[in-house]
Image (cartoon, rainbow, N blue to C red; front, side, top):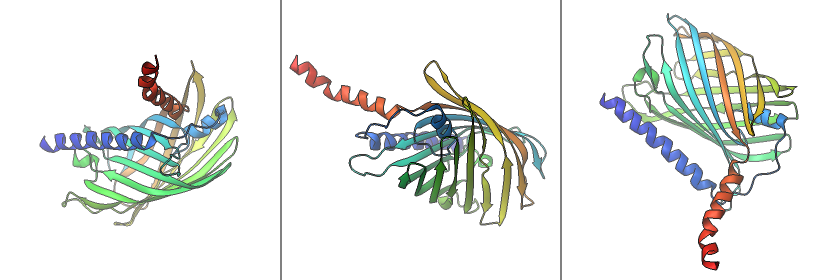
Length: 295
């Protein structure tokens, strides 16, 4: 019980710290560019790292495991936040905070998982291409050893994207490695490759694929998924929303238990004018005393 409360406090503290860092770096950011088209918003909604503020809710149901009986479910939240070039450091960043909110494993136990964070500094950006590098971080916030790796992890990350009006394609690479944590747990050296592609069908409809290829470099294990999904991006009373349904199948190079197949569903809330609105609120707050004194 003591470990569970410690994990929850660490989870909350880590979440708060990251948000303070993100918001603190954002003050003084330059206003965002012109309004995005519907096709551009659909591409942004399907990008693992986005140029606009998003909150993604996703649920993955796994009805079949190899070498293990039972089912499981994962509900998670991704907060994808761009940090525009600001006055002290004129480099744009794309960040993603992943919160595994609820995990239910095959033995019907439920708990929270490890908190993950990635930040890519955009080193080169053109109209149809960008690439960047940065760190990836894993914090051992799981409230049970069955739901996390028990290790503080940090490592390199990088990615690139090619985009057009109807298509988005690219690759994200992460290599988190353990640097501390529970001494009784195995060391971690994982490699994640996430190719992604989205094609617009028109009227907000799209098809997509985002398999996450996994290599455990410590034990020589690997998982190769195949997935294919479809969804839609639409405007609901002035709020941009995107959803998708995506089944997948896994092929493994290990005798350990792994998900054989499953289905993911997700809904994304997009905030394309987040920094512009935040900057306006900050300016009004900053100038409010002056306005009152002038009166």
